[in-house]
Image: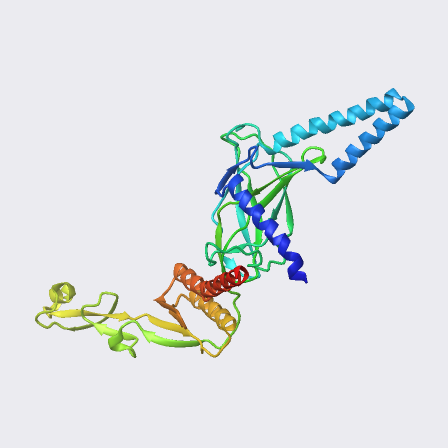
Length: 376
């Protein structure tokens, strides 16, 4: 019954999103205009209008000019506030910065830079802005022709955040304000951020202006790191000497190891000329090179997928902090050994998106099959 009742709401929301895509296209930078701004009275505004109507009826009934004058004053305030509220919000311009990846069940941040508006660069927007996500975020691993409204069960998708604007005039010496909007996603994968609803009721709170902006931002949500039975297999970078961790070589130039008798054919740059000049003995320098150890992280296939991915995530973070060479080998994930922050992000991206494209493909096939049955 609940699914049947929610179906009309999903259809209406789907059509609303398609209409917004045409009216307010996706972009990393938005300058508000008539097409992107919506305005209606607030609850306090409707009460103010009702009060004005009551004063007008009472003044007409009792022929009280002062009461009529008060009702006209209230209506004039409503009209002036309507234009000023819209004009103030129309000066708002914002640009979104690339969103950094974060772990699921943790909060990321979407950074927004407040910019001078192209139509009024010296007149900033005033008041307090209210931010809220227009529904759950969409999984980007979904097929292009498929739309869904339950792709991420975000418990905080309807939470709103209030951030005051500085209101300083833009000039060369002023610093742009940066707004941080929290992003909370509860499952791993790659997501396209939904539209961000921005609202303002400056100056008197009688009217509320709002807009739904799509910043065309995607984010990879890493798995949550947890302990697990991860197998760490040790390998050497040099396949010919897997068991040796330290070798002495006359052609190596890393660390000085010892002096040996010079043999014909050895490079002259290895000759210790100080000993030759001192006592006439030809000796050559030998150096030692330490081979870096590498590891491969794996886990048994019988373990639950989410448990395995969480365990591999924790092991990836720990080996990166220890500055170790490591790779991944789990089912379809094969990442060659390497080290560094970029390598850690490559491993976490592979773990975050594992199995998501396949699940989206199955959901798309299931939806297509249902539509065929409905047509028949």
